[in-house]
Length: 269
View 1 (cartoon, rainbow, N blue to C red):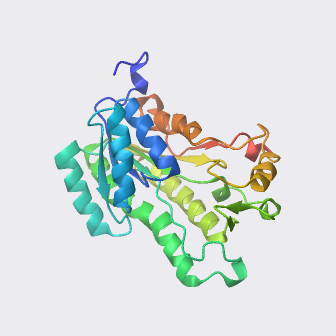
View 2 (tube, rainbow, N blue to C red):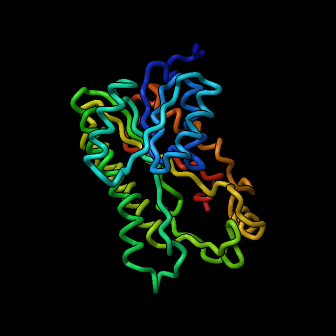
View 3 (cartoon, rainbow, N blue to C red):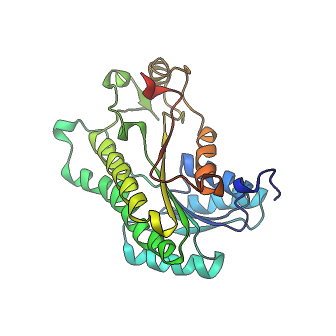
């Protein structure tokens, strides 16, 4: 497609998006395709990946393909790299967006099971590292590429536990566990490290930090959360797309090691 400013175009670029079937991933997939990208929708849930891919292709024919994969398995990622290259071309942009909620994800810190801790860290942090190893290393060898890591405001600030009194999601009491904050903070550290490590090899490594995104939380949570946001509301999933498109495109060609915080002003207070 034709863009007024070609720097924002993703025409001819292949984007690998992990967590591509999730709340944000599904919106990212559509936005990337709308801006000309070929999108490899990677998700461990094959059925949902197929659904997202079908929705994208219904609007942008042949722009997306589904790739079920376990991002915590390096051999699987190596195989995935070969498959995407053969079917879609070299990966120009890697978006590490996958995240995991373990069976006891909302357990209090004092009794949070180590097994659950390890499961979340394996996907949220180790999976990002492995993706960067496999796809980022190939970018560095070629001398170009963009890596975008999805963080969270709770990777750069602590959650206000008062928000969660009476808060529910899908009928279940919720909170933000320490493992989530820790996993996202670790990815921010990795983002900065790799930006410096690959800066001279043409690979840009940046992050996007979403604020709270509305996805069906109950009124209590929405009200309490919104009271802490200068803009007075939660985000809609589509409102995260602009930052991702910017970092994926050549419009951000002199930008690396940065974190675009899209939080309605949450972190200014």
